[in-house]
Image 1: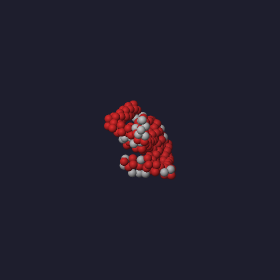
Image 2 (image 1 turned 135 degrees about the vertical axis):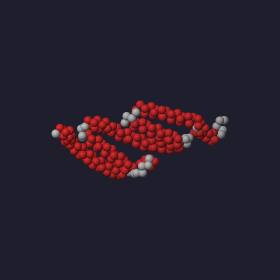
Image 3 (image 1 turned 180 degrees about the horizontal axis):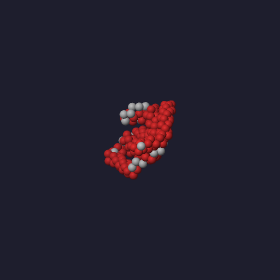
Image 4 (image 1 turned 90 degrees about the vertical axis):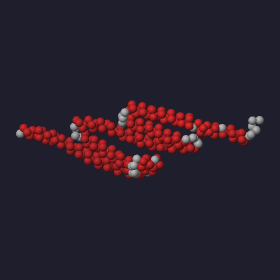
Length: 230
């Protein structure tokens, strides 16, 4: 009988763990059902609010195609939240086992999960803002006949997107000191590059721009009244 003692101990541990396993299955099943409902409701909401049209105007569709994600933006967002909801359900189901090894991992992941969502939202919002601001800057610069208007627009978009990525990575605690230092270096380098580009390569364009906008009133006045100096 002594040879059966380890087997009996194992069966007792499994029997004691059985309620936790049942709770795990129930939580996982409920989580999957709620995730499906969430995806369906979110998909209908996004389509009724014409999110796809907004995403097309904001350039999200082209960004998805460049990333080889040929899908509708509303479906992409709904599936993204569906996957995150499934992940959360799986973590909660694991925590129902009440095992020390899994509890520590689940606790860290559950703490990390909200920060991950915030980071994703920050980066997505930053992308939308950079596209909107970039177009606004481009239109304003073109209407004002500013030299290198498209370059300025791209520079503004790059700065906003770098800032959004830095904030998102800082939110999840990914090498905070390194990210801050790298962002500072990139920001300073980009500003310096723009300054050199406008200072060295755009001197003639800048002079023409200033002459055209600063001297035009005087020139028109002298043309209208050629004897005004008398």
